Length: 319
Image (cartoon, rainbow, N blue to C red; front, side, top):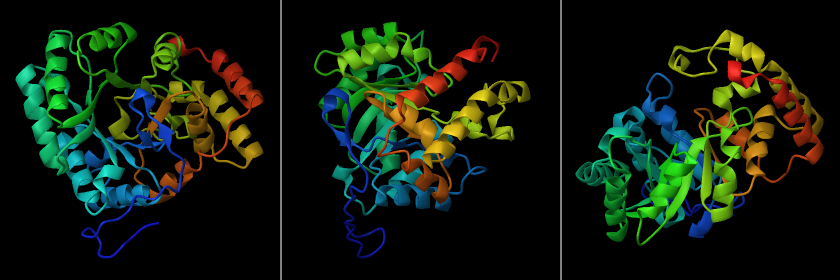
């Protein structure tokens, strides 16, 4: 139930219109889908007002986990989230942010966290991640700073992002009083490198795995438009888009058979995996509602086998 008295000032109870899933060993119950926000720091993609509407609508629909980073829009994404969540019960939200690659020295980590707390207008961060590993800053130094933040109650859980398995193991060794709660990595129906070693390990150790870019910026569900903002992206090439069309077509066929949308099929493919939480991005309310439709059902083994057969036929090494 939503108790809405005065917008942005009253206490709004976060509804449980969608299921909750236990986030690894933490025991935290969060929405299986995590709302990402890297686009909210890019005014050319989404205005601040548009971003705030999406965030508040997502929470009203039952999504209580929101992912951001200090680097998104040079802090603008965090500021937008801080304003958008005002009025909602803070203890019912799970806010995730990340310290940047160039802020991994001990003192810099502390300063970066303090700055994120200020931008988010909150007294604590639920989950604080190392955004990218730094090969010239000792990992031990970074994690000691993060453990200090944890001991002070400024962050509730520590995580990493884009860490290969050896670095994830090392990170766990450098913590003495808590453990790594999650690894956020690039994972979707097309890019499955994590399935070789990392995913089996996180399942075994009950570490949550957050899968970012689950829709491959929309190219997995039929997007062919190559916008200027996406020129950095590996898939944003005409020859690559053409190469993955058999997989796109199979997703469309399965979606039609099930009465679902392609986005729902691609997200469900991740959701049915143990301890995997897709981090999706959207700037449109209709896409938000569409993505939530990926919950509450499961692809069959037959459908999974069909997807795998097509995926194997795509020459990924050339993409």
